[in-house]
Image 1: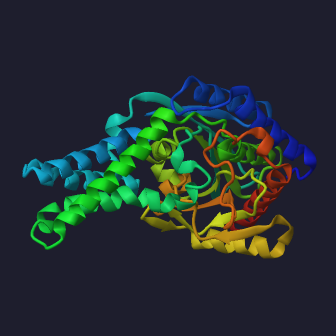
Image 2: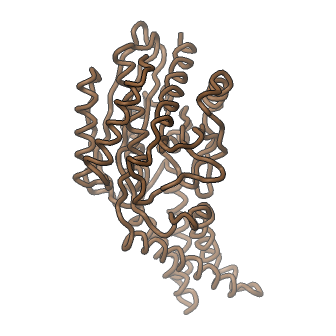
Image 3: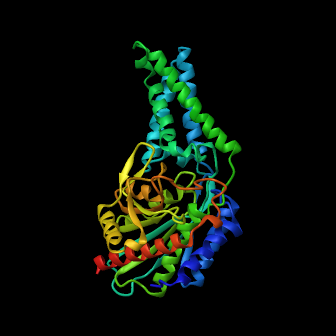
Length: 391
């Protein structure tokens, strides 16, 4: 595989093309589709047979979760007026939210997904008899800014994401709480928590702006694509290498879910290596448990062990374990939820988190060349180890 500075330069050029030439890539937008076309052409020029797989999605996670939270909040208000439906709405909302968060059966998302979107896929055959498949993953789309991502607030992101679930649980327990001393105060707490959650969601939708997404996640898409191109030039001996660059990740992991539904049989035998937000000048971490805000899926023990061995053998990579992501799931969470083998690489630090996370300052100027070099080397090491195991 190509390990010289030219590989890093090619990846950086692709990050620039996605985040500067195209810019913000809102889910289901024309810019997102332009990014998919650009990536397909970039891969084709480098000998990778790439294509696009369409699916239906929506532009923001505010759509399903706004409906769920509004239903729970309305139910809480009706409970205070003695209306029977007030007991039903929060319970139904909590049940739907649990299904959506589980990522295997998502009825509300499926109902709301009506706008066209597209994943970019490719496959590089092994040089000799294929015995295993590794799929390199990233995502094309970008998110919106909001108060919850302000540097002084984002450190509390996990708690803020847990707030609507806890509030919905209090409201769903309304019939029981009415019979308890202090129950009304708990119901009021649930209403206030849900009102705050709705306010934060509305602020993001109304006042937030679409961000350039150079680090999150043009960096991950470019690294996955560059590694696939290197494999096309020098195929692995016994490992077919797939590429999956999703869209609608930021609106609810919809691209990964669409891929999982369409490719379930082969995906069960595939190892997914996901690159998400890997361009920051921070330690490169491999994520041990994914999900959020309340349910977590452990990464594949075999992949965690391989990452730990690579970190031991190559201390220059600065590769370290991380308990989890800053608060949100990744595409790999979709695969882990189905019991498939997956792991995510993400650049972050315990002290700083992810600078420019979901902010307009997530620009190409804040992508570190050294970080891209280190994650490319880490990806190459992981591919070599997996191919060695397949052989």
